[in-house]
Length: 346
Image 1 (cartoon, rainbow, N blue to C red):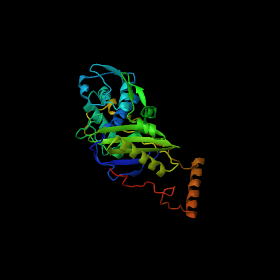
Image 2 (image 1 turned 30 degrees about the vertical axis):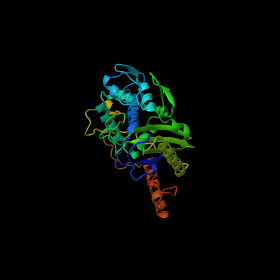
Image 3 (image 1 turned 120 degrees about the vertical axis):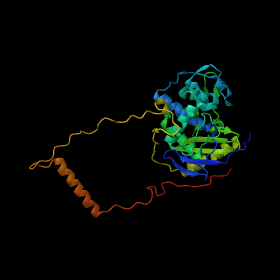
Image 4 (image 1 turned 180 degrees about the horizontal axis):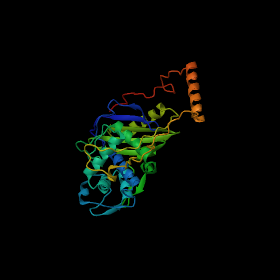
């Protein structure tokens, strides 16, 4: 099946450092993410598990309104209850839209409230070209993201929830009422070192994929959006992955992204656990409010003070004798970041 898709957009990222190795000129363009949206739905589900908002064994009741969720579906029926773990498996592997809605309602009570949480999390992660309207990614006005933002989200998922990330590499799983197969099997089976992460397709979006693979300690992430067929998507991602492994240094220090710290936004309607991780402010005094005793005439300087003064004098003398060299490039001899535009075509 070929799609009348949006413009093609792509990013190649070194997961270890977060460096963008190559990207198309429109890598920050606002495009339809389709089911790449579910990476955010699952990020929040994992976060909720970590927060204790819900457990994997919590029984979630399906609502009648969810029957209108379009394919792909797990097949939930109105009034049915199902364990939260099965909703995660179905959303991650089959890309089930009804499961994504069930996750949203279980955590926030409604799709609109969950979308608010999605947008809060996107801001905290640094996704600057993203706005969510729903948890599944079906085309909706005002629901958009970019190849750059989806790459950032994929990297955040990998580092923040390693205990759950492995679900994206499973070829199939029991989802309670059905066995679900991974929509990303072609990449997982066909590319050496592949272990994730999420496909997406709608007629408006075309064929999207955020993919990740590791070889010999080098981990590469590729996001490709707007491909015209599933075959074109696979071939393009393989090409970009190969290029990423050629461009990335064999050794690089791992720089983990910071976990999101949540601050209220203009569209936030509340606070508490449902808003994300709880931020606890340190309000206890960390120093004594009583001043130290002033030196008195006749007091001898302490040994620590004398040693500190000697060390400071020695450092000044060394600086005068041998001034530091000016360093203008990264230690490796290559620029700390390079932007190479124009990956492929549409």
